Length: 202
Image 1 (cartoon, rainbow, N blue to C red):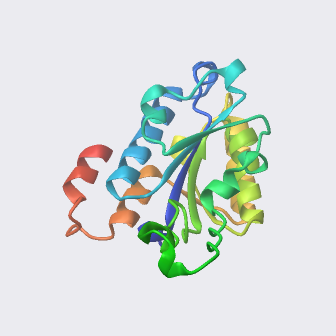
Image 2: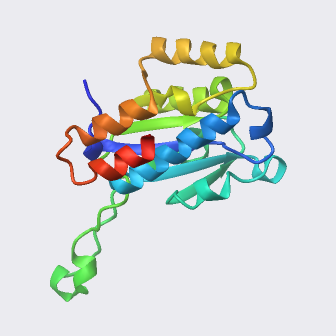
């Protein structure tokens, strides 16, 4: 089973100013998160961010924030508890009452939402064993297909990070790397974005 770019959304969890200095391999992890976000933009994949208690931990890195359609502030460790599921799978718009012909043209047909119809969540973040883990497990419970990008995830210790990966794999998440995501979204060297993607991941 390969990733399908047309079914994918990207979620980047808690790359926050006061958290990142204590994260193992933080510079590499943040660099890969930025690569993922830029890849997603090139491939027209919706990108969402989360921030845990931003008043205490600060905001995500500004360059990462700028690449997200929305950044969800949260207090629960799982972003699903604070509304991530609704961003990823928005409720269908209610049909307007009355005669459809009397409505303005833009109201006659519901406009698709950014995440509508996309059931695969590619996710990465910090700390892997807390906010990333709990968010990913809740997304699995919500029947999303969850793909965890291991080289864009970390914790303060390798032991906690690796324990999170073991648990996520056991729960049914797919474990991948940034390059796996890039090449599976592309599928072919004939893709019009191939050269740009190659430049991003080298």
